Image 1 (cartoon, rainbow, N blue to C red):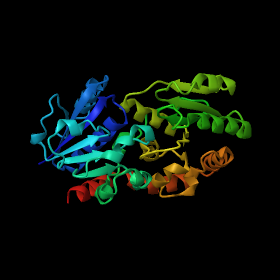
Image 2 (cartoon, one colour; image 1 turned 90 degrees about the vertical axis):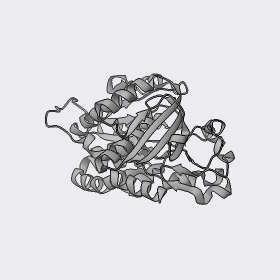
Image 3 (cartoon, rainbow, N blue to C red; image 1 turned 180 degrees about the horizontal axis):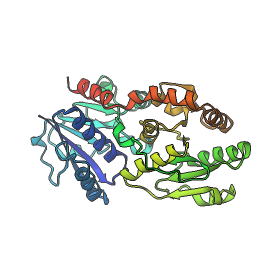
Image 4 (cartoon, rainbow, N blue to C red; image 1 turned 45 degrees about the horizontal axis):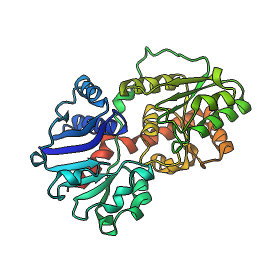
Length: 340
């Protein structure tokens, strides 16, 4: 059995934990014997929630939270955006360094990574190209892509989900900040209302950072009565929310200025929800321009949404072609290439 230890700075039950759970789900579904442990340097409230999810979804054979750092027990160590690992180990030969952050100021350390590490892992080929100049040239050949999977069975829609909205939901799920560019999502929604009439409701779910005064922006656009805000949700509630958006014939919108992968967009696609996303998400949709708009071009985004609302079958068929991008099989191929 292959034994992997992940080291991550904070247990927050955020995107990194979601990725680890999805990997565990992929190993379980394929009956592949990989034991994954995760060691957190600090608990920011996520450990209890992560353990509960592991237990609820019966993933304990494939992922465990450990309280002690004992690297000798493992075949390989994956440090996820945690350079502190180099102070914790005597040598670096077992270390894969995973870089998942699209926030440039949070990844300055990758310019100084030791040259004797096993390799660097990134979640998309596009992100590999984005950061290649930041990495020591000696590590270019040791930089590998390990794409994320999204478990399709989590997004199977039961028949008993009823329609919840009287208007079509236009949804964004994720962090509300400058890089995610949530203000542009609101601009697009506002123009959509202006062009197509009062048919829509804006739904935003996720943590709000101090750099964005979300409710002030909504108020200035006179959208308070056409807006729903949901605070950060547990993973299982996000899948329920996506099912409700799908049943209401809604649409997912992302105006992000930078992504290492774009997990929330991938989850929407796996749910069968039409997506309009900024061009930085090109890798998620195989470059299909149906789903992309040029960042900042609000008019183009509104035209794409209008087309999707009028051409449901075409969009549905094109979405179905994208699901393989996030399948367990795609992830497992990359995982196999990494170790063989």
